[in-house]
Length: 456
Image 1: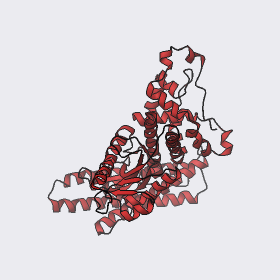
Image 2 (image 1 turned 90 degrees about the horizontal axis):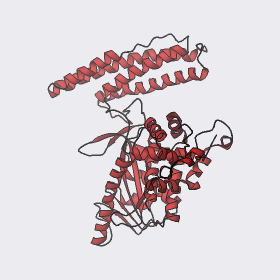
Image 3 (image 1 turned 180 degrees about the vertical axis):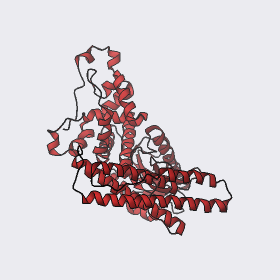
Image 4 (image 1 turned 90 degrees about the vertical axis):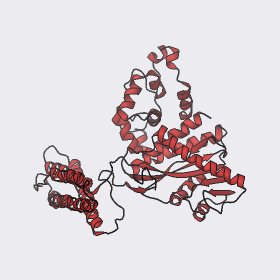
């Protein structure tokens, strides 16, 4: 059951000293912004009509949004977040949690993040931007957009590492299916030790001469892939037995049985892709849509051309900010982020950014981009602007002074991205999958805009 706002007051709260009951200046300004009903309007629309008055009550959405704001600005995990809020009278008061009540369990907050998705958070971000325009005198006139990588929460991928993951998860999922379906009797051998032996051997082989090392690595990787193929054959037989059977083990629900079968089927599909990638790699074939993690199957390689990190793995996020001027240090608000997996061209995400601008009713005069944008596609996505500046492009119009001003304005987006990643932890998504990355980045942008509007 949806609860938008809770009653944070109680007699004990009123008896506390005034200096304890008062919020800090920063939290007081943030609290004032989050008190706007428009910020929570999207949460009401998200719930179905029947959920508004039925079911187990959730934590108040006013409390939930404040908890997530603290999480994004501090970098705390869910457990530490709830421990800190529970132990602090001021944070309790900010989050609307009375002293006499227990703080919500971390699992409640964690599950709500996934359930709500990113759309409702983007709607709250739009409400904060409209509040800045309507009440704080913010007049957006210029736009600058740039892309960065939201790294997936995975280790650096290697073919043999993926093979090691595959044999382990197949064996684990097979045990759960055997426990849920009595008629599924095919045993899936856990070949983790055999594959790990080859992982260690590859580490030793890399110290050899270049030609010898390459040959040794290929042999060991193919041997690891062969172990995965053996586990796949056994898992496929087990899956067929489980699907053909109607029996369910005692104490196992039908939903748990179906969930175990579906999980095994999913691991089989991903493990088969690992074997195919190994074969294609050594056959010299081009690998499209390369799988880099079994646990985050949506993540993709991103080639950014940086010397420090030429290859990253995750998602490309376009961060577009609207500003009131092009002067250094001007106030800027981030639009809801746009995201795609893998190496995505800058202009691919720009139409979605342009749709955000149109939806907010913002009229811009100038826009500045880096050299990754093309002029034709950019002007098509953003028609009607007086001037579009693309760094390093000879077709930029205007005087030397104007071009110099817009070039400096564009460079500021690099600092903004660095600040966003450092202070609001938008650089690495701790939620897996494409939807998880979108949720993570949307919360970070919302926290950034709330802080910016609070300082206006």
